[in-house]
Length: 221
Ligand code: SAM
Image (cartoon, rainbow, N blue to C red; front, side, top):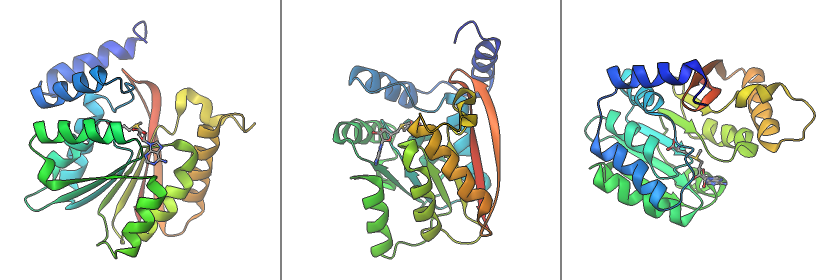
C-alpha cells in the first residue's frame, strides 16, 4: 500500500497524535514473532477506540476477535477504575500471546480473555446473566458478523454502541455474487442493522496503513 498517498498521511497523523508506546509496539513485535497475522487495527484506529471508550464513559466492553490483544490494550486503557473488558478468541495461541501482551501493558487485571468459538462464548455470557456491555467491538470472522450482532443485542442496553470493523473491504462490500463469505457476512450484518428498529446506525469509510476499509457504528435505542 506504500504508493497510496493516504499511507504517508496516516504515518504523519500517528507521529503527531499517537505517542509511541513500548507496550503497544512490543505487542506488535510479539505478535510478529509468534507468527500472528498483521491484521490488528492501526495505531490511529486503536487510539480512536480508546477515545470512544472514554467519550462514552464505558465501563464494560466486549470484544469479539482478540488476536494478540492490540486493540484490547487500547480499549482497556480507556476504561475507568473498576472497568472490565471481555475479549473472545478461538485460537489458543492467539489468546496466549494476547495474555502476555496484556500483562506487559499492565491491563491484564481488567481484561478477561475467553478461548472458544465466539458464538459459544457469547451464549455462555447470556447464560451467566452478564451485565450489559456499554460497547461491543466486532472484529472476528466476518462470515459470522450477523450472528454476532444478534448476540450483541442480547448483551447490551439502550445507549450501548456496537462497532463492527472492516465493512468496506476495499470496496468489495458492493459484490452481490456471494463468492466471498466475508463480504456476504458483512452485507448480512449491514442488512440486519439497517432493518432493526432497535438500532440507529451509520458506516464510515476509512483509508490508511490498512488500506481502504471502514467501520459500522450502531447505537442501541
Ligand atoms: N481486534 C484485533 C486487533 O485489532 O488487534 C484483531 C482481531 S483479528 C482481525 C480476528 C481474530 O478473530 C483472530 O485472532 C481470529 O483467530 C479470531 N477469530 C476468528 N474466528 C473466530 C471465532 N469463530 N471465534 C472467536 N474468534 C475468532
